Length: 228
Image 1 (cartoon, rainbow, N blue to C red):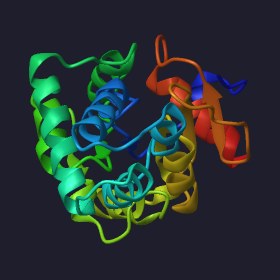
Image 2: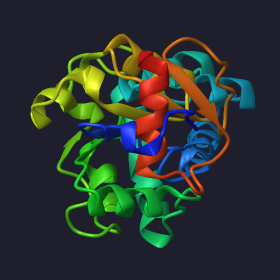
Image 3: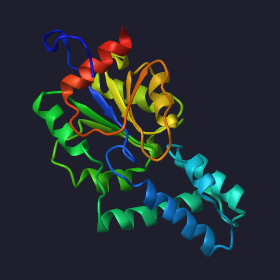
Image 4: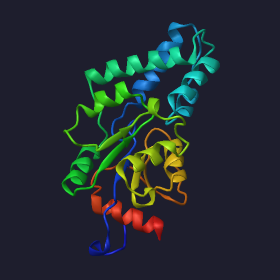
């Protein structure tokens, strides 16, 4: 991923991971739950609406669904129902994305700390983290623990602060334009792994199709190229 000699690369101070669509392919679970909830309450929903919410924070998503689907529910009730449905599905099967577990393990072996930076709430995040080796993440920042969710930079700034590192010395791994915008606003170089929605090339990001075969050295190369 970089033309720099490997011996000149400096590993990131930390790697800050998104969750949904990046480590696990839970976006289909969210969309399935959205359609089920809306149908159960006599509303209308569409794939376009579902895709518009990829990467968004849950309070925004709850209000969006309530308004656009015409539901007689509060945004908080919508969010609670979606989380319950997704957690139930995750407990049956965790759909890991290709290469994510291998890269997490390689970063651990290299001594690079990782943080989870997700707009999912703590219950869901913990249920997925529990399926990974102990110590995979040095810290986690969840959507119900920030005042302003993605695309605001707060989640990534908080993760870097918890780890005691400079955001510019980290690398974020994201899959959505909303998440990429959050990391970029926080000053974090981004490896964007396209999945459910397109991520267009732009300054501050390097776009790939998969994490399969990606190494800590590759992340160092991407960060060096983006900073350069």
